[in-house]
Amino acid sequence: MAVGDAAEAAGYPLVPDTGEEGKVKWGAREINRTRDFVAALLGLLPSNKGAAQEQAGIHYGTATPTGGTDGDIYFQIV
Image (cartoon, rainbow, N blue to C red; front, side):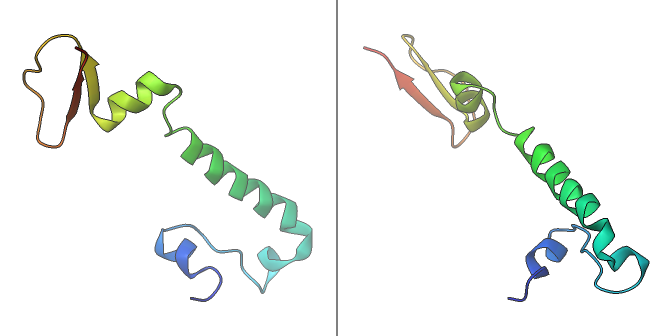
């Protein structure tokens, strides 16, 4: 796979290698744009263990599990 193919397939803009926008002087802007993408992805991650379990559909408690959807995990504390 060529450099940039995965980014292009994911819908991210590629840094041009020609023209005004392809000049080295705009390198810092492109680095910052990449960091913006990373920050946006990090914003999707859960902030703590409880939030990660909830997002993954993992629940626990002392009662017999009720409800839920297919694929949910429930740990019963005995």
